[in-house]
Image (tube, rainbow, N blue to C red):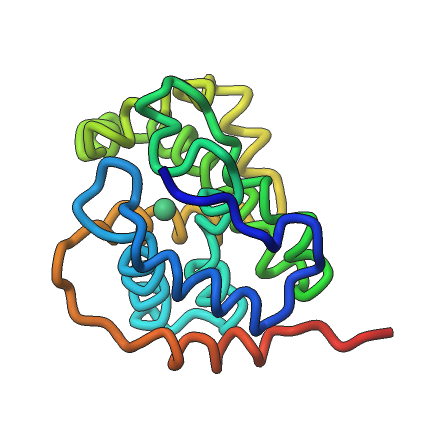
Length: 193
Ligand code: FE
C-alpha cells in the first residue's frame, strides 16, 4: 500500500506538490492500467489540447491529488470506501490557488454523478472501477441534484475536467512531461495579500 505523504499537515508549496506528483508515478491509479502521474499528465494534456485557461489545466493536473493523501493507498474502492479524494487536498491547495483551480477539483466527482444522470451512454462508457466508485460516491444524481449542480459556478469546467479524466487511463499515451505542467501551475499561484 502507498505510504501516507508527510505533507499532510504542512502548507503545500510548488516544490512539495511537484515532488508529490513525481512520486505518484510509482503508484497505480486505482484499478486503472496507468500510474497516478500518467493519469495526471494525460488529463492535463487533454485540457491543454482544448485550449482552456491555465487554471483549468492546473486543476486537471491536480484533480486526484487527494488520492495521494490518505491511508487507503490504491485500494479505497477495493476496500469499499469512498476516500472523498475531491476534498482531501483542498484545504492546502486553497493557500496557493484561486477558485478557478479549486472548484473544478472539488466538483469533479459530482460532475460524474451529473453526467450519469444526463447521459446513459456516458454511464455505459465508464470503466468498471469508475462504476464501482460511483456507487460509493452517492450514485447518479436525480433531477434536482443535477439542476443544483449546474447552477454552481465552475460546473462547466468540472464537467470538462471529468470528461478528460475518463479519457486519461491509456497505458503508454504520450504527453508533455511534468516540468511542462509545473511551469503552467506556477503561473496560477495566487499573489499574497
Ligand atoms: Fe482522475
